[in-house]
Amino acid sequence: MENAAVDISNKKKHCEQHMHRYVMVQTIDGVCCDGIVEHVDEDMVYIAVPYCPNEYGRNDYGNRPFHGGHGFGHGFGGGFYPRRFFRRGFPFGSLLALSLLPYYYY
Image (tube, rainbow, N blue to C red; front, side, top):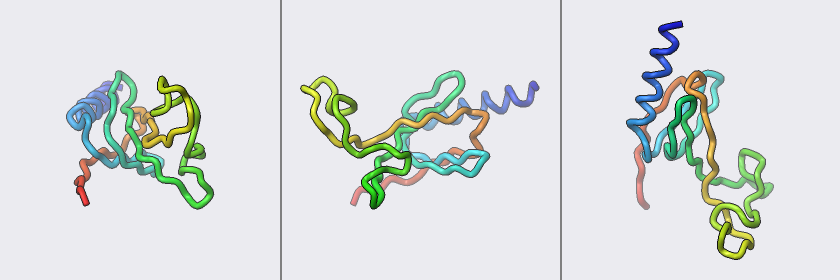
């Protein structure tokens, strides 16, 4: 039990060191996700994942690309504005790897 607590503490510290950086996260069940480390709390790391629609007009998480009154549209009279990022939380216990990715400007 003590080793698990140390492991989670190390993962939390590693995530905090990469705050606001572009990273790749891999979980123990094989899920990979790239994005920006947005927030770290006691149990989870939160990643801002870029929105990438597929051919059906939905992103990989089943969300519609446009919505009213949320994200960029909130507080500006509602309306429909594209959402650029989605927040995903990952529990420290499920993390296998978090690695820094290079960011290129084209």
